[in-house]
Image (cartoon, rainbow over all chains, first blue to last red):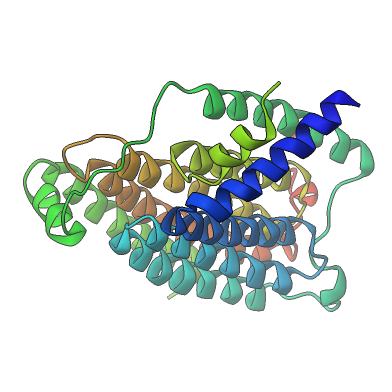
Length: 192
Length: 114
């Protein structure tokens, strides 16, 4: 009973502190974060649990866009733009194309899952993993100290063309190889 | 036990921990889907979810840790490029498998099973 009263007292004190010395920018930041984080998690659950694979693809795109909004909200504008262009655009279109090309008769059951025993085992594995990761995340010694770094795009361009120029070239070659490989796979090497 | 007021004050000051937790949950959802789905395309979508969770970590560390430059975001951009090539090859493979075998159900693709 005392514990409950203590919690109620804490709630009232928090509400009063909000009314007294409320920190509006911090609260707005928290609201934006929880809105988009909640939406992203909801849509991510939709990817896994929708029965129609087209709904899953739509849900996946919505998750990507929510994550892009989160990037924008912490000041990573360039990453937000890349996220919308590459994930919300290209990857979403590729997945929808793949669904279209491998369509079944009945779209209502086009996203089949395994049986109950698989779900229980998967939930166990995932729960253990999540517990470990959450413990690491909560008890990590890092204290957040946001600092102004200036404009992101020029800084990224400088890094990309000086210190990280070799990975940049390797990524370019990788994209080319992936493109050729995808064309060969989809077309068939034996066909003329 | 933590007081409610302290907890709310911690929770409403968005920092690195929020993003680490979010990305852990997002990664776990992707992992759960990867372990329970049967179709090849849903598996690819779950892999994309997991890659996205990792990108959130990279960007959040870059924004909230006292680092001198944008290395973290650059790593995230490289990761996006690798994810894009992965999805392109994955979709091409899916299409090929569907044309050759007439199915995209991973349980029916067991030619290599011992």
